[in-house]
Length: 169
Image (tube, rainbow, N blue to C red):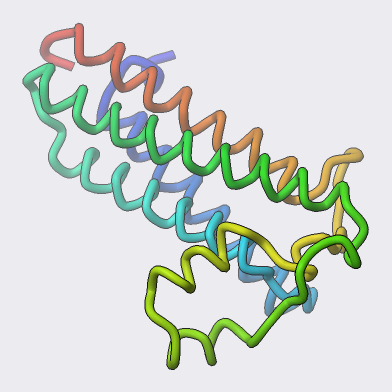
């Protein structure tokens, strides 16, 4: 259980998990052919951010509790944002596509013509493409699995917080 109490090891494992999740996302997109919806893209961005937080934490490896708590808090809050988006995505999937607003323009086009705030609102609100359930495993859809994964990131934040109380780790 060394890796659960060692700040650098815990952060390094989290970096590897983030890389594996992003690789799986690109596998589903590029090999399997599943197009990511706007909310899927937001969840990818959050995994990417959490991976960077963990990488910086592993490299920095602060000795002082305040530094460790800063990384722990950041990971926990970003993980919480991921849980919120994944829950919203799961909730949207419970509705038929005709009850959700139309997909609108492709994201690439919107990036060219709309302000960032409007694009962010669109991505967080979801669209008809977000209702499609094109994959599941053990009865859970991708957004359902992302809830579990983001809760895991929040546990990572709590474990980092716990290491802040230890010295010379």
